[in-house]
Each structure stands twice: as C-alpha cells, then as structure tokens.
Amino acid sequence: MNQLISFVIPCYNSAQTVGKVVEEISVTMEGLKQYRYEIVLVNDGSADDTFETIRHICENREDVCGVNLAGNFGQHAALMAGFHYVHGDTVVCLDDDGQTPADEVGKLLEKIEEGYDVVYARYKHKQHSAFRNFGSRINELMTRVMLGKPKDLYISSYFAAKRFIIDEMIRYTNPYPYIIGLVLRSTKRIANADVNHREREIGTSGYTIGKLFALWFNGFTAFSIKPLRIATVMGSLAAIAGFLYGIYTVIKKLVNPAVVIGFSSLMSAIVFMGGMMMVMLGIIGEYIGRIYISLNNSPQYVIRESINERV
Image (cartoon, rainbow, N blue to C red):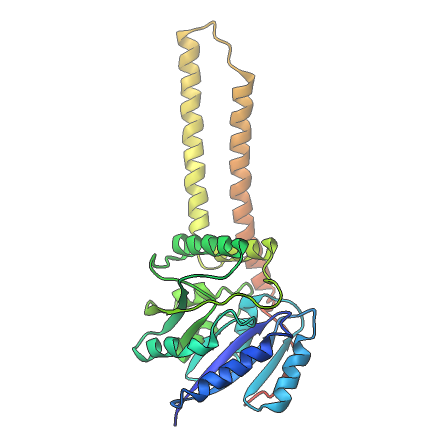
C-alpha cells in the first residue's frame, strides 16, 4: 500500500485562503501517485469564519479532518493538537495563507525518502514583510545560540517529518510547546529543500510584536538552561567589575587624598548592579513560573470540537 502523507495546517483568520491551500494540496498529490494523503485543519481561535469554511470543506471531503480549538493558543500549540489526529507515515506542516508552496511538497518528500528524519523548506527570497524577516533573523539567532541549531540549517514553518519524530514530539504534554526545540532534541538527521516563497495575496500576518516576543522567550526558556548560565556569567562579571572599581577608588584616594569620590559614579554603580540583579531574578522567576504552571497541568490547547475524526 502507498505511503500515507498527513498534512497539518494551523489556521488563523484564513477563511479566504485555506480552501485554496487544500485544493492545491489535492491537485499536487494527484501527480504523486506513490502517496496517499489526508489533511488536518486546526482552527486556532480565529475571529472570522475560518472554522465554518473548514466545516464546509469537511462536509464535502472525507480525507479532511477539522479541529476547532476553544481559544487562540498559538501556532505551535495548534500544530501539537493536529499531530494527535494524523495517521500518516510522514507528516507535512505548512501555512494557511498560501505563501508556503504546497505544489513543491515533492521536494521535501524526496529528501525524506533519502533517509532524513526532518526536512525544512528553505527560501532563497522570502516574501514576508520587513517586520517578519526581522523576527525570523532573531529566531534564527536564538535557536542557534540557545538550542544548538547547526548554522547552515534553515528553519521555517514548512517542513516534513517522519512519523516517529511526531510520536516523540507529542510525548511532550507540558504547556509552552516549541516545535523547533522538540525537533532538535529528537534527531540530528535534518536537511533543507529549496522551494519558492510566495507573496501574501490576502490579509496580513497573524504575528504581532507581542506574539513574536512570547515565541522568542518560549524558545529561550522551554528547552534550554543557557539563559540561567548567561545570567550567572553576567552576574559574576558585574561582581568582578564592582570589586575592581572599588579597589581603583581606594587606590585613587590613597594616591591623591584631595580627590572627591563622586556621587554620580556611586549611583551609576548601584543602578548597574541593581539592574543586573533584577534581570537575573526575572529570568529565574520565569523558570519558576513555568514550573508552577506545568505542575498545575495547564493544557497546551483545548479542543472544542472535531469533524471527520478517523479512529
């Protein structure tokens, strides 16, 4: 029997675009006869009629499953929800706005067939806004420094993964899921496949400054203790700097008793040290808060209803 490919698409305010993405997947997969496919559409608390569009698609197709989350839990949580409904040997994740080219999924699947566990789409020319491109660069730096991502590996929201990777990912049941962190801790056999990136035809990106900041901070703290180590190093350097400055002040006073020890230098040292301490306490508090939330069994997501769920 042909391999089954499961497409998972997190949807947010995409009532006008998700139908086109589903249709493009269908047309593309008709040309890849060696595969069967299914589609899982996850509505992440959209403010428009996205789930009604999903419901209409599901009513006319048995190979499409619709999942409606009770609120807006974020793209990564929506993907984790969708992973629980897949049955495929390989899972492909892509966006709902049509910018990720579903008609080039064959390039990702070819790499999977070569033996890689995860394949990310790599774009030569991204058609995102300057704001989104800036966010991508920050995310790239963060994953490299905090999570040990190889420098030459390009990360995007369009990727294919073997089923055992997905099964390993859904073992993570705590809040604040971070897909890239889950992938990097599961395998090192990751590759890129070059695809084209399209301009957005309708609407704007659902990522705001607040959401991007929350995503970055989640990546900082969810799968790495490096922020704590960085805080320790910074605190040590600040303590050494304060100690050396104290010695310098004493020596200066001994060499020239007439010199007046400045009030401004004292205040700047106090403000600097106080700021450093607050930053370190904030990082530690963030870790403690996440531990508390995890112990309270806060959910990654809440499902309101599902359509065409296959057992």
